[in-house]
Each structure stands twice: as C-alpha cells, then as structure tokens.
Length: 147
Ligand code: NI
Image 1 (tube, protein in one colour):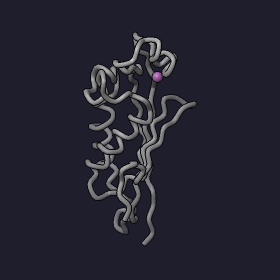
Image 2 (tube, protein in one colour):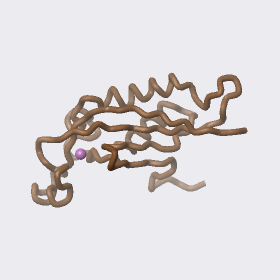
Image 3 (tube, rainbow, N blue to C red):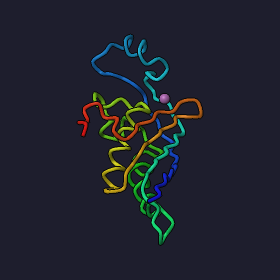
Image 4 (cartoon, helix red, strand yellow):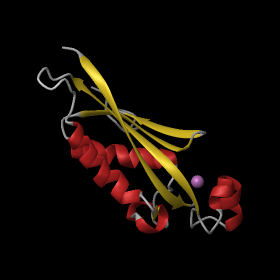
C-alpha cells in the first residue's frame, strides 16, 4: 500500500532565556551568549510536524487533518503562544529543561505522538527563525531499544 507523509506547520510567538541555575552568571554567559540575558527575548517559532501512514482510499488522506489541528492547537499553540516558556511552561522552569529548539522539538514530539496514538509521527522541526532549526526524528531517543 502506498504511504505518504503529511507535514503540518503551526506558528507561535514566545519568550525564553537559557540559564542553568547551578552555574555562575559568567558561565551561563560563556555557554549561552545572548540567549543567557536575564530579561528574556522572543522568537516567532514555526513548528512542523510530519506524520506518515497509508493513504486511506476513501478519504485520500493519511490522517484526519482536523485531528492533527486539534492536537497541535492543544499541545503546541495553546501551551506556548504568547507565553514566557521558562515561566509559563512547567517542564521548562528553573532548573528543568533549557528551552532550546532541540528540547522544544523533543517535548513536542512526545506530546504529539502520545495524542495521535497509532499514527506515526516521523519528525518534529522547530524553527526559531529562518536561520535556525532543530529536528527530532522518530527513533532518535538515545535510550531507545533496537528491535
Ligand atoms: Ni532565543
């Protein structure tokens, strides 16, 4: 059976900063540069979620697009749009995950895959802007067991 990939993009605007509380201000600045500035800064992010599956003969689709949109609204837009990621999203709070594109993509991948159930999520790409993208692919968990 033919399979296809479907890519859906959503956009959100959010603020963040990178800081490890156990490091000195100097060490945070040395590692994270401008991203360590204490008063936060913003990006208009684009998040692209790719799903893959057989093309349903009846609908011509690999997944109900309305379902994808509901999941992305809940898991991505509602959670991140017009928020301060460090302050408003508990998983990225002080001392927890640093809100890099990589961590955002990994977090969104896991959330979206859980919400979509049996439909395979192939990748999640988070763009801070047109110059920087982070991609998490299916099976890229370092502790994933092979078959
Ligand atoms: Ni930034």
